[in-house]
Image 1 (cartoon, rainbow, N blue to C red):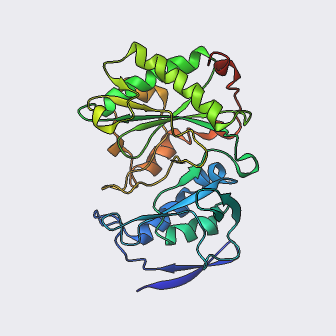
Image 2: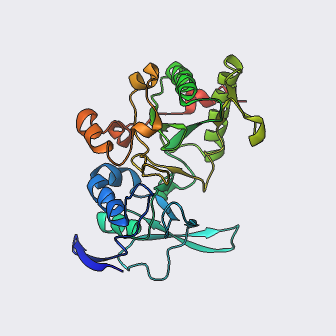
Length: 301
């Protein structure tokens, strides 16, 4: 077992099992850590002040994984945590808040492949500042079908003067992030997304579904508004995913969505850095763009 201690921003971070294979493609934990170090300028600004849920793959993506909300007892004292009472578990959960590079590296060393993040900042946990439109295709529906549905979401948002930002989920689907002012609760936001999705389903029923039963979604793109729920997390942009090829949840341009000639596997640990060099950080505007959901919610009964 390899083990080394590195100094990052005046903090000691212990790295272990660097040779551990995390993806069957041959990518190791060392590759995982290096990815997040190199990608940190494009990740940290978005996830700071947000609660982080660890999704750990100690034996790589072919082994068992587990989710961990509570910071483990051995968490370094310099890792920021946020205590939150969990009514379901009847205890205080100390969530990790990843605000700096040492914490991000420490999390990667815990075999946290993915970035599962709350949609609200910790100062206003009940009021999300990101609304998500989650589109999931169920075979034989294709990613191209998902891109077509995404354009309908864009058209609907355009009518309300709202600007959404599409990205691959890193799996088979597509997410559209909508930055908003944190002025409405999760329940209110969820109803707004449901309202738009119901109208989209009404105009394109042959390829979309709101069906909650998984076995009734075949051949359709599932319009999932339920992710806009307090305590739920989303895979944030530039997160690696636990699938062969080490795919990355990647921001897209609307021109790319409209053209429809891309596939999720086009964006991975090898291709993401040349892409950013070419197109830049497409999500950068959401850091400062506050939009109001009020206009849409006035139509929700």
